[in-house]
Structure formats: structure tokens, C-alpha cells
Length: 492
Image 1 (cartoon, rainbow, N blue to C red):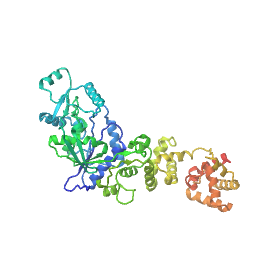
Image 2: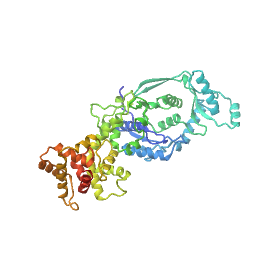
Image 3: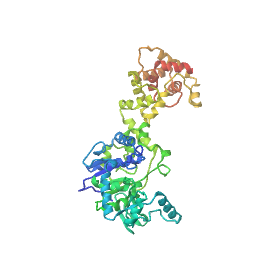
Image 4: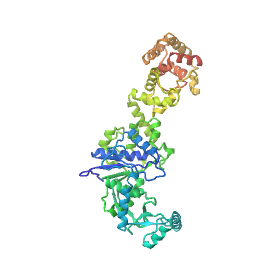
């Protein structure tokens, strides 16, 4: 299906409910809307759907907005930015919803329902027992004025239900899924305004999308079941439908619904684990969308250039944490050492390796640590383990194979030459940097007439206890002269 935005002023929106942190699925929806808007020179709107009064909070709202900003997803209009269609928070638009609800009531397309929760649950259980789809059977559909007055006198607070047309087919031409048909036969009349006067999602979003002139609604497949209810409201009010695009679900590697066992589900958790925002954005873009060509490492401008709903898949996307780590590692290796240093410092502080304020020496040490580990990290939180391995004097071989390295016949000779090199330096004055470390190692191999492996491996085990890790010429400056000598003296 070819998607075109010709002759249409593209206006798309991301409308989260502030009931928790920004979910990975929500972030992907926001990204796809952002890319679509930028692709066609349109506007990206962010508004808040906070009609769930019990669960919504300003704290969650701020978390969501902060996560979007961290990801680099900016909006042209909406909450915190302003625009011609203010306010952008649903609880500040209640008068508007009441006006449209009154129109539906006046035209007989909606009605007051006085059923209690207990009555509705009893009806639901009866239908389930009969093997039928639970739905409202229309008890209050044709109440007389006298019957309504009697129910009101009992103190019942009514909801407003939409009058669903009988035996009606609702047809959606979805930009991702093609034509989808819904039968109203099993739908039942549904609530559009709760008894406290607060509109439900399926009603409020129709009004908001209309008044904010939203041209395309791009959202997750989980909203597909809501769409026929919304389309009926558009039609009943004589409103122009936007175009809809429902993108695929995100599943775990085991093809089950995405959950915490597949990896963290919130954006902030990935931020706290040390994933770079550009890496997470790149990964999210590939969840259900495929760019032309085989290149998978894409900048945000490149994603805008290539993005098309034609290339959004119907099939579920698989959240592969290993692929995310690979993408993040690619971005870490492309990032400047200065930026990596600043990003790594909070992780080292949180681990207690550094205090609140770093000295110039600690900052320089961190930069050297990032230079040593940059090619080995899949996320920045891993730098803590590397740093902790460089603290203290005691070293223990990690396994039997490492212990056997220290028993090789050339080891005493190598250690003696290395200690001589270290002790020949002025410990209090001389700085030990990477070029010096390289020169020392080269000199030892020359003096001992041994191959690199015979020199480097025992020194690595002596200094770290491990057989693999950052280059030895990085490890030596990180430990420093006194640190190297202390570890040598403890082990041998």
C-alpha cells in the first residue's frame, strides 16, 4: 500500500497516559510519529491523556516528557511548548467534551445509563456462562423520562453511553494493515462519559484529534480494537476521520508479550543502564520498520530520510536485547572520549568509586579508563566492573588456567624485569602514560628475548587476575607505578 501525504497538511500526535514511565512501545510510537512528521514537513504534537484520575500523576508526566527529550524526540506543539490548540492536557478540556456529549444526547445518538457496577457485572457473568461475548445489552437504551427521574431520585449517577448502530459494519482502511472490518453485533453500547463527568479515552481522543486537526493517527496494534468505537463517534458527530496506521506489537524473543523478563520495559531503565539515546532510537526504529538497503546503524536525519509507512511490517517485532547491546556498542565506539568520560562518571560515583566532586586526576583517570574499555563495552554501566578490578592491591587468578600461567618458567624473569622498569621511574614525579607503558613492554620483550605472549600474559594475570581484558599498556597507567608494584608484591 503506497502511503502519500500529498495535499495533506501532516499533523500527528503522541498522546501518552501519565500512569507510569515511558514504555518502550510508547517510545517507538512517538518515534514513528516524529519521523513521519519530519518526513513530510508536518507537525508533531504531544498531548497528555490524563482522564484516568486515580492512576495519572504529574510525576509520570514529567518522566515521560524527560524521556522523550533524552531520546532526542522533540515536539513542535503541545504540552510544555504551547500552540494554537491549547490546552494539551485532557483534564483541562472537560468543557469541550461535555459540549460534544450534549450534542450526541440531543440527537439521540447517546443516552444516560443508570446501571450499577453490580448489575453490569451480573450481566457480564450471565453472558459468559451462556458462551456469548460480554457486552452491554441496552437495559437503559429506551428509558422514559419518568423512569430516568425515578432512577435519579434513588441517587444513581448516570454514565453516558453511545448508541451503537445495530448490524453495522465499520470499515477501516489502515495504512499498515489494509482494509479491516468490524461488526457492531458483538460490540454493545459503550460508555463515553463516566458518572463523574470524566470522558473515557475512546471519546476524548476523537474530539482532541478533530479539534487539533490531526491528519494521521500512528499507534500500536493494541489500539486496533478501540478504533471501531472511535470511528463510530467520528461518523455520529459528522467529523472527518483521520488516516490510521496501526504498527505491529513488540514481542520478546520467545514470541510472548514484551515483559521485564525480556529486558527492561521503560526508557528510563535503559538510560540508567548506560545505553546511549541515539542507540536506543536506532534500535526502536528497527522494531517493525525496515530501511532500504542493509545498513542498520542510522542517524536520526537518515531515519527521517528513509522512513515510510510502506516499510512498516504487519508482523510482530521482536525485542532482541543482544541486538540492542550490539547497536549500543557500535555507538559507544563512535563516541568521543570526552563525551564517554562525562557519561561514565555518574556510574562510577553511584558505585562509590568517586565522590560527588572529581579531582582533575580522577577525571583524567576516567578518560584513560574509557579509552581502555571503549571497544569492549556494550553499555556504560559495565565500566564499573572494569574500574572495580583496578581498585586495591590483592589479585586472585580468575580460574585454574590463569593460575597455571603464573607457573610458567619464564614468569620470574618477566616480573623481575618489569619491576626494575617500574622502580627506575621516579614514583612521586613521573607520570606513567600509554606511550611509556608500550615502551616498557617492548624493552622487556627485547631484554628477555621472549615473544609477546610469554611476556604479556603473565603480566596481565599478575596485574588483573584475568587472561583477557583491555590492552596491557592501558592497564599499567590505570594502576600507576605504585599500584603495579603493590599487586606484584602481593602475588609473587
